[in-house]
Length: 126
Image (cartoon, rainbow, N blue to C red; front, side):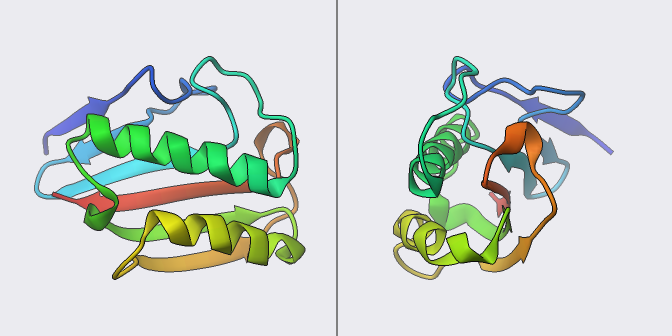
């Protein structure tokens, strides 16, 4: 099986042993979870809305470098530190997928990297 690493300096670099995205042989691209880090690796200060806006910017940058758009995304998973954040995240996330949004799961978890409140991962097809 062939695979290709996809990376860009327009989104934060990996902070561990993982790639920003992997294009798998065939038609799938798997994107690692994005948290509220700037492309320079700085954690975004602010509430869950500010965090989500940075994550959406990172997602757009990664899709662009892969030659894709939000319309190519078929599945996302949203991880929240609390389901109390669902409404705020949902509103900002929804603007990324204006029509025919992808399938999605949303779960609350005990903790996320760097103490953030939200992380979003995605799978796309090309």
